Image 1 (cartoon, rainbow, N blue to C red):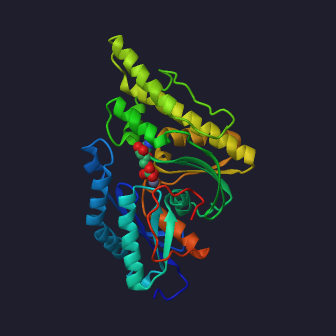
Image 2: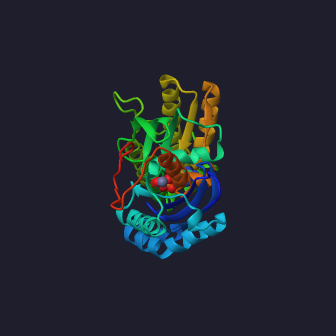
Image 3: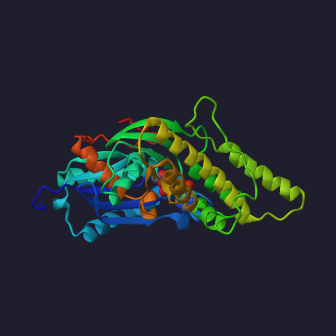
Length: 342
Ligand code: KG4
Ligand code: ZN
């Protein structure tokens, strides 16, 4: 035993293309955060191949967990509970983490806590911001999700906006492919845009009629594709940095304007961002400027806690554990698990 009242969570994350394990103390202190990324492997195919992801998770998961325990200098007997992402995500990938977590929890006689992946992303903000406590507004922008939520309490969300089509990260990935930057698109567009003029091409900012906090990115993606085709037909060279910067600016403006307006209208003075796209430099910059103007306090995690990791799952699992959430041995992967559902 760890000899005091500390709650130590061993957390496991395998919902997409990162095999990850972490040990988190008392919900806020990361003792270890081990991530085995499959990005190099999937790059060969231009995107995540689900079957390959599952196989790689199986190969790596034991090693990653052993490393996480060793780095944290704890043994399984010191662990209070096992937290695991059970959805949303790729079913085969999720199953690897869920089966592993169940096996460890059963063998070691520890409680098991199922964690919603998006709740994990939101919770990443608690790691480096000891002052951040609910309620606050959070914009979650990842490869599969774009949500604007009020975090009413730990694990309690009110969804006030969502994407009607592509997620923000998905738009980055698709546009990156179209302009020849390859996979993973987000970081590559981010980098290319630094050399470009964000006003070179004015792309439309879609609004969803009657839903001021909803997002839509598929029209923007089509506009980029149309622009590329049009320029090619005219025999013109495409300036990749200008195109990347202009596209990114359109995404950033629609994210920033809605998130800030929502925080103001709902009456919260704290705004957080989360998910892979939250590490985008233009989004951070745009948010900083807008929040300063609006008198809002802005929070975002370090890039390592924005993209998929298990530390964020450990934080969410801690608060769920404290709320009494426990999973049974029948815990299953739920690929389309919705936020706020159990
Ligand atoms: O949260 P995450 O690691 O996985 C999901 O839960 O989906 O997010 C991955 C997404 C990818 O679409 C990736 O292109 C995007 O986050 N991303 C970025 C940046 N870094 C990662 N998008 C824009 N700018 C970045 N710097
Ligand atoms: Zn994620």
